[in-house]
Amino acid sequence: MGIVLGIESSCDETAAALVDSQRRILAQRIASQDEEHRPFGGVVPEIAARAHADRLAPLIEATLADAGMRLDEVDAIAATAGPGLIGGVMVGLVTAKALAMASGKPLIAVNHLEGHALSPRLADPALQYPYLLLLVSGGHCQVLLVEAYGRYRRLATTIDDALGEAFDKTAKILDLGYPGGPAVERLARQGNPRAVPLPRPLVGSGEPHFSFAGLKSAVLRAKQAGQCSDADLAASFQQAAIDCVIDRTRIALASISGASALVVAGGVAANQAMRAALQALAAEHGLPFVAPPLQLCTDNAAMIAWAGVERLASDASAADPLDIAARPRWPLDPEAAPVRGAGVKA
Ligand code: KG4
Ligand code: ZN
Image (cartoon, rainbow, N blue to C red; front, side):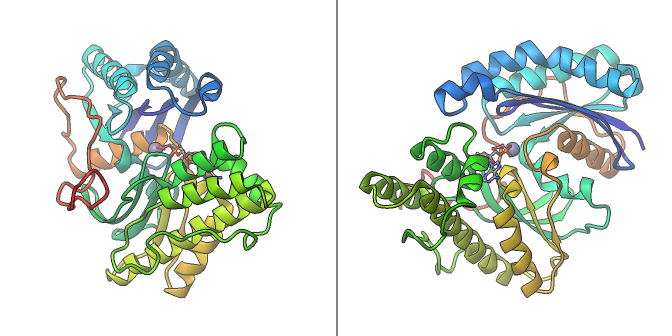
């Protein structure tokens, strides 16, 4: 039922992709900004926005050329409209608006989190609604019940840091460079995950929420104490983080029924040790475990294009107005109650 051009620019990847309703990724290009942000040990929003502005238009042209297509052959233009770093989101959304206006094709404004939430369905045609999704990235740490296209029930979120953020901060403490997650995982392979006693925040609590700030502080104290190797500290951090994720996801699983699968998405889903632990948890519950291939786990435009395909499948005349605003915050589940700690006073 058509081909969607997807555009992603909400953080530090500039990306474009063409995806059709048969789940074929006809072309995709990603320009990473790691080199620009590395000297700062994290993403600098202003630098990110400028890099997106410089790169996006030629990247889209190259993506169309890779697929041997012209803009007037696509059926819709989907772009991340939030949540994310607002300068970057605006670059992507404004570019999509311009292309939509010039080509007369519909604009589809996609929630970046929806892109992550639906990416497993792009990768796996057998994955049926509803499924339990653990969404773990640099900016987000949530458990969602994905009930249907457009219906997402948030069961849990983090009261402080996202899981990827905890990996990135640990990498900074251990001087492993940026981006931190993959470097921590590599070093952790050489260490003993039981060597350093570290806290497991919120483990055992009845609500499935997450907290990683205390874990990160404990890593810092252990590093300063200087009595363990960096590899043991990395391995012990990773194990503590995984223990938190498994305990919290187990609580979430107990609170729902009818999920067809346990699914993980977002950048941290690239972590092999965590995948293995989640796979075991799913098996314990008799559920299939679904994890998209790594290039669909980290930020990419194929998942944004796919969210556009699903939107068109649910409403063939779907189109957002050209004055739709970019949103720095955009909860997937507007009904979800705010949790204490996330800027909410008791
Ligand atoms: O989904 P993503 O590309 O961007 C956001 O929307 O945040 O996720 C990036 C995050 C970063 O925090 C990065 O350190 C983390 O995912 N990450 C990992 C691994 N690969 C990427 N964390 C742990 N282990 C990994 N192998
Ligand atoms: Zn993301």
